[in-house]
Length: 251
Ligand SMILES: Nc1ncnc2c1ncn2[C@@H]1O[C@H](COP(=O)(O)OP(=O)(O)O)[C@@H](O)[C@H]1O
Ligand SMILES: [Mg+2]
Image (cartoon, rainbow, N blue to C red):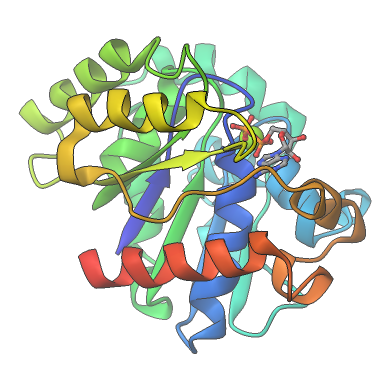
């Protein structure tokens, strides 16, 4: 299974979901790879000292001779490897646009490493450009984090339209695995409204697990740890573990 974690809105919890879901899946003994495709490299920094990153996904996607395996790094988490991003990735949008195989670069590179991993997760940037399209073309599933707020559904039309286009041609077997509501604030009443709003659009695709706002989730990346070692008894740890169970039961 290859899961893209995608929403073109920034700040909705894509990276937080990618790093902690990857750690949860790895903890079940599955060989897991987290591919960071966001030039901001936040997923990378959560597990790897970015100063030590020489080759990155930029090289994988632009250099025919660089294989995915050439850039992969081990993390401190057992069974979890990282394919790091660098700011250079920002240049890729224009670079891939004119290329005949521009949408297929990631899929082609993953093909060579597919059997080494039981699960591959891809963190994507807050755009629907070439990088995100590469992720969708290479994936079996899409997981959409949506922030619990009154504007939660703004922009989901464009996202769903892009997914339909990818399904129509380059990747007919792509499926939406589910929608996870993030940054939920239990103290406010909007939470329930928002859940219902999102459920009207996505129906039973909405995961039962909701991720609450938690300072621990915000803090753990700076310590280069997942929530499971940084604050194993926090709500964030319990919720991301529960999300991983739901994810694995759906694939
Ligand atoms: N459940 C949460 N509780 C508290 N802070 C969170 C939570 N999820 C994400 N954040 C914080 O919100 C900000 C945006 O989250 P992030 O995962 O980077 O979103 P994205 O990758 O979609 O831009 C980050 O500072 C992150 O630490
Ligand atoms: Mg991010």
